[in-house]
Length: 60
Image (cartoon, rainbow, N blue to C red; front, top):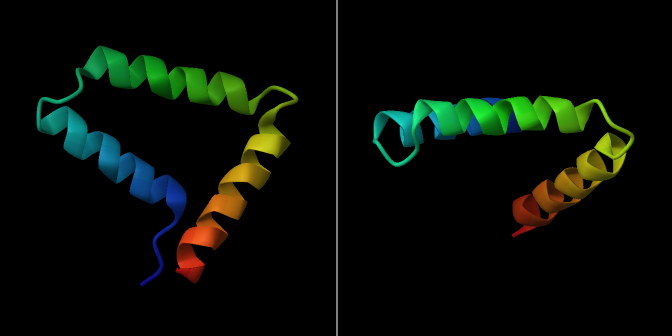
């Protein structure tokens, strides 16, 4: 079963919030910042960097 990076990140956020490591307000602020950042001109560079990192990790 393939798990996308988005689903893995969402699962990680849920685990961190439920475990009490991160408060809901902080998680919401980071999520909104991520959506705002994705709408900027920097989004393609971030996507390329994350794709390269994922490729590097999967090759290990």
